[in-house]
Structure formats: structure tokens, C-alpha cells
Length: 204
Image (spheres, rainbow, N blue to C red):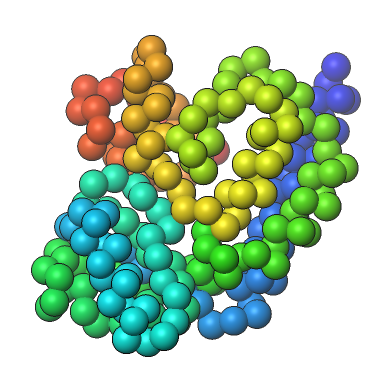
């Protein structure tokens, strides 16, 4: 019915709001940041993170595996500054760009947000989806409601495995894709994986 659909939508909005508020609160607890490193393999970006951590004594790691040559790193502000300093001259990155974000998302810096999100999820009934949901935590398709709930909380501190997610979808009778919301970033990345992929952008 329209009323149950409306209440379900408002619950989803509240859940997204709570997740955002919890992550913002975690970000406010410590100085942290993110940067995008362009033009290198994930192995090379891992090396940059290791050296930046070693030289600053602060953690930084890949937080978003977008596609080959495009990886976002996340960590303490000092370590991110070091990544920015050494990525081009020492590791021959094409570019290193600091991201306009509030904190080190998809790392252990977000741990304080997990319990708050779990508490909210405990009040929500997740039904088995008609269409499997591919999680960017592990790049696999899921239908078990309990597993989906667990992955939603893991996603806060886990790297975004977008490469694996794209590969999983393209290997599973892929026909076409829809990117819902402003911009065309994800369909642009999809073209890096499958040049002739059919897609449609739906501005919301």
C-alpha cells in the first residue's frame, strides 16, 4: 500500500541520516582526511601508504578501490599530507588530490559510528530482496537479510571494493546499468571496465 511504502521510505531516509550523523561525529573526534591518487596500481598506492605511515607514525590506507589507476586513501591528516608530498616525486603518480571530505571514511577512524548504526539497524526489519544486493564490502551478491545488515555496519570501516563489485556484476549476466543521482562518475568508471556497457543516468 502507499502508506506502508511511504513509512518504509521515511525509515530508509532516517537510517541514511543516522549513518551520516554517526560518521560525522566520528570524524569530528580526530583530525583525519582523504586523498585520491591517480595513475598508479593499487600495489604502488599501498607502498605510498606504508611509507607515509612509517614517516609520520600515523595510519593511512587505501579506502576506495575505484578502478585501476584511481584509488582513494584515507587516514590521519599528517599521513595524508605525507601521501600528497611523496606521491608524484617519489612514486611517479600522475596526480594526488586532497578530497573535500570531513574525515577518514572507510577506516578504523569510523569505529565510533559502528555501534550507533548497529543500534539503529536493530530497529529496522530488512526483508529478503527480490534482486540480490551486491555489497561493496566484499564485491559479492547477497540476499540474506541478516548478512545484509552486518555488511551495512562493516561498510563504515571497510574499504570500498568497487573494482570487485563491478567485476562481480559484469560476470553475472549484466545487461545494462542505471546511475541514479547527480553526476556521471559511476557510469564513467563502468566504461573503464566495459567500454561498450549500456547505461542510463537518472538525475534525482
